[in-house]
Image (cartoon, rainbow, N blue to C red):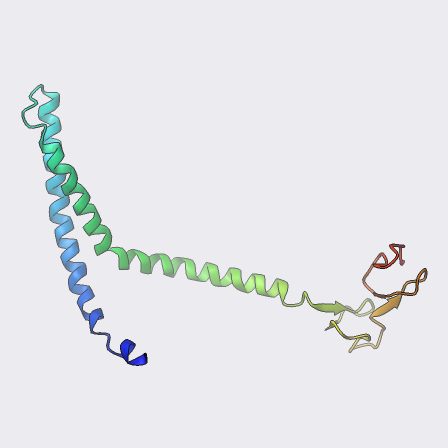
Length: 154
């Protein structure tokens, strides 16, 4: 499977194809525009004998535009990638910073981040768990209400 990707001779043909598409596009598009402009000028002057040039010019414009789009696709895509990559990278880092500590317990005494299965703070030794005074259920020190009975803890 790796041998397929080792031979990348097809990449050498891309600059030729891009150049060809650009040349075709720059020739065919203006020809199509000229045909349509001529047809429309004569049509609005009252001579409908050249109106058929619109039907010849429209496909020329389409073919020229498509050739130019494919001819400049790498240039435009590289520009867009270069402009958006730093923004996406920055956003991903911002999101990561915000969620990396979601699964941690915060010590109510010193605000140290502790593992979720910790019962005591690794920095100051304060208990991270508390018991509900109403039902005796073990609750987190951060909780305001008991998850078992619903009574206020503090």
